[in-house]
Image (cartoon, rainbow, N blue to C red; front, top):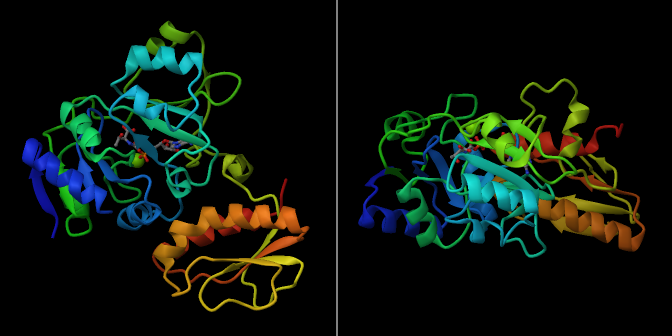
Length: 322
Ligand code: TXA
Ligand code: MG
């Protein structure tokens, strides 16, 4: 049963407690309602993908109460500071390189080296984020493929019973998602139009290019998904045996004889495996480099629940490199 909370002091305290305990809480922002999870908790983040029914792992935005908190997890640039001063709190999301020691789980960023960060404008959202005291990952609080919700009723229509609570702060003022700008490269690139206009952004930092988000909206070639973290070692799928010169990505009872191995879920739980997938690929890549292994052998993960997203990600990793 999904708790209906009003965005007053008691409701915010309850919502924060649920988030800190690993629960999913939808909350209003000035753009759309977000489906929040503790971004430092990969298991909670995995539950977000399950609740949304996402067929693959899109990178999520980490939400913070202020710029100082956001820039503790990403490397801010001069342009980022200027944009933060002009637009935060508000409907602008900045993509920046993760800092060493970034608290956000790799799964929240779909394994990328960059992280999207945002400081929402509504007082209740910022109070919630302050009370949680941790970054909150929050995609729009709709089922995958549906339109973004701008009231708590929209959220409940799709997610009632699938999430711990919804924090009702009324209708969203902006009603479209935040603008996403990539500041991690040599030049700023607008990845998603949204609440902050291109004109307003260019008035602050000058001309920006136009690009695409990693979700693949409008994508012409799957090669463009190369921006997703790809392990350095080749990956082969559905391994039923493994060589001493290979690293094993295990799921359930592990194959014997690998040169290195990482267990996604000893119990064969796809949600646990999703939470550990990107850590596992990175760990095996590193072990492979250190030990001179030739590739990663991935055991079969069933196509159930988050298994679809895991297999989507593994298939991309195993696809011929262009
Ligand atoms: O207004 C909003 O941004 C809402 C509220 C809840 O804050 N959130 C939202 O999240 O729209 P979501 O997950 O529906 O969209 C996040 C967008 C996606 O297009 C994703 O590809 C992009 O941000 N994104 C996230 N991390 C990224 C990264 N590291 N690099 C490039 N794009 C990224
Ligand atoms: Mg969305």
